[in-house]
Length: 444
Ligand code: GDP
Image: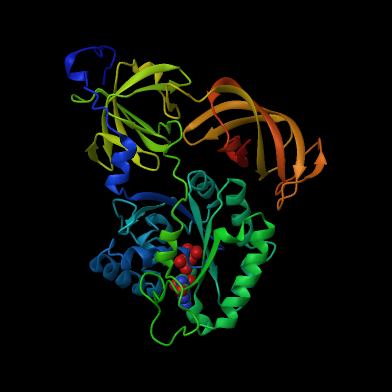
């Protein structure tokens, strides 16, 4: 794929701007929102089963596939695992010698296209979850309501709290809480209320606002109140939304379509006959149309958008929240890398060499070398100073200029990077050292 002779100005690459009123088009099109979420919760809370149930009841997975899983699971005496296997695509893990081509992690309703950002259920879950949380619009917290399980998920070594704090530190504000396996508690209203009260108390102390939290009683195994309403008489005390309705309610409130354009490049495709240079990604904010000029940062080079695809369909325009492929011209591809940011030329993002961030430490942090990751952007850098240790709930200063930040603490740190990079607040960053995530949080 040679791209050196990209002929700038050749007629096939020229496009005639249509000068559309994109906001008007957007309003008329009634575009489906795209919502990305991570699934969090203690091991065995039923995350995989619940997601499998969603996909199955929304007919993303067909009856034959599930039947096949049921048979296989039955052979090893665990037929209840069939639903969990829909998402759990690593065949080594379940050791059953069957491979499936694509991980299913997308489903849609009339209003929304959902993407599940990581397959839950893996043992080595935290790194995946951090990556997922960095792109999440909201989180789904699955809680096991069965006797003793809720309690152990909540204890010191339980993952419920750890995951919640982690997504919070990454700036996720909304959580849909699935009070799951309520079939094992006789669909008891008291049990639901008890779990709701304790979880609410914990999450609000952790800094979540109660209006961004919702609690839905359900069972992933039986499917009650997931996509279909609970069976007759099971929960006479409940007439709220099903889990899927609750997910639709948690569509991101602001889509930032009116803000200046920001789109982080996820992938670059070179050398196509029709389209010599294309990039893909999700539009973080703003909008554009065919014919627009954009600035690529950090190179500060201009490019012209000569074609747009939204969800694999050609389109004349696109807005924040959509996943797109852009065909570009009038830029030499050497100026373009994954992790770059496409911006409006009127107010481009700035390239910076230092910033402060509020991060949750996973390891001891001191002034040290770290790689700074933001989406697919990553650059070598250094934590140059520890400014303060902060209260996890309200963010107030507990200790100024600590010599060391212990794992599990929230801290404000100063970071310098080797080369200027396009970053601006608020954005989620991950700090890694020797292949491990040492901290994650928000650039301020
Ligand atoms: P994960 O580790 O959170 O992904 O949990 P799994 O989905 O693998 O489920 C763990 C175990 O709980 C499995 O044996 C499931 O069959 C069981 N399970 C999951 N959801 C439910 C539920 O709603 N009710 C009951 N009774 N069992 C469930």
